[in-house]
Image 1 (cartoon, protein in one colour):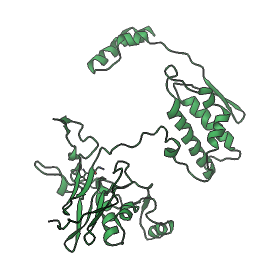
Image 2 (spheres, helix red, strand yellow):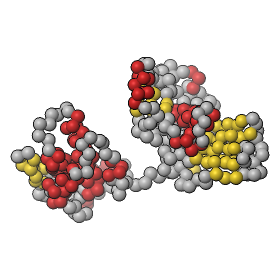
Image 3 (cartoon, protein in one colour):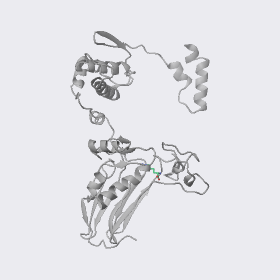
Image 4 (cartoon, helix red, strand yellow):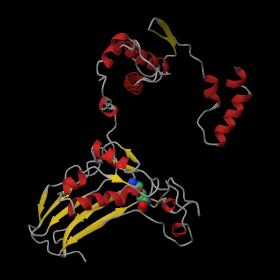
Length: 358
Ligand code: DON
C-alpha cells in the first residue's frame, strides 16, 4: 500500500495531476484510508443474499428488486415471459429511483438503509405496480426531477405586430452551446456539422455524402430550418416554424397541413401528433396517437416501416394564426416543449392589422 499512497505510484499520480490540471495531490493520497463497511443482507426465495452497501448502490438495488419481486409473487415465472419481464422492468424502475433519491457516500448523507432493504418497503413500492401496464418513470420520480429547462438548441419564434407585419424566425447554433467557445459574450456555433461530412458516402442511415453539401471554402452549409409565413388572398394567415434538425420541415408541414387542408385551428394543428420520414433511414416515426393501431397495421401491410415514438417527441412549433376578416390573432405554443411559452394570450384583436407581408 505504501508504494501506492506515499511511494513511487503516488509520485506518478501527482505528476500526471499537475501536468493535466488534475485535483488529486500527494497529500490526498497520503491521507486516504480504506473504510470497512458492513454488507447489506437480505433474503429471497429461501436464500440469503449478502451484497455491497453504500456508497455502492448495488446491495440496495439488488435487495429492493428481489424484495419487490417476492412481494409480487414470481412462482412459476419463466425468464422470457411477458409477465416476468414486465415485473422486472417495473421493480427496476422503482429500485433505481430509490437509488437516485438516496444513495451516496453514507459518511456525507443519511441513508435510510434498513428501510430501503426491508420487506415492508418493497411491499409498499410493489403495491404501486399495475401488472398489466407500464408506469411512468417521470411520474414516479417527479419530486426529484428537475423541470426541463429552456432547450439549448435551435429556437423558433413567430411574431406579428399591430399592423399585421409578420416575422418567422428560426436560429440555430446546431448543438447545445454550439462549439462551446464564447467570444465577446456570445457562443460560436458548430454549424460545420451540417455539411456532408464524408464526401461520396451516402448510406441507409443518416450519412449523406452528395457533392451539393460537401464542405468547401466559403460555402454555407445545408440547413433544415423552415420558418414559414402563409398568406391567403394576399392577407396574412399563419406564421410557424420549429427546431428539430431534419424533422423541422415535417413538423412545419404538420402545422401547415392542419390549417390549410384539415380544417384545424392553430391549437389543434400544433397539438396534432406528428409523423416524420426523411428518405433515409427508410422508416417513418410516428408520435404516439398520430395513427390508430388499425391504421398502423394497414400502413405496415402496405410495406411501410414504422417506428412508434412516445408522445410529443417531434419539434416545437410556435405558431400564430391570423384571421384577416375578424382581425384577430390566435397564438399556440407547443406543449411538446416545457419552455415553449408559459402563457400565450388566447385571441388578440388587431384592428389595425391591414398589411399583407411583402
Ligand atoms: O439548420 C439546421 O438544420 C440545424 N442546424 C438545426 C439543428 C437543430 O434544429 C437542433 N435542434 N433541435
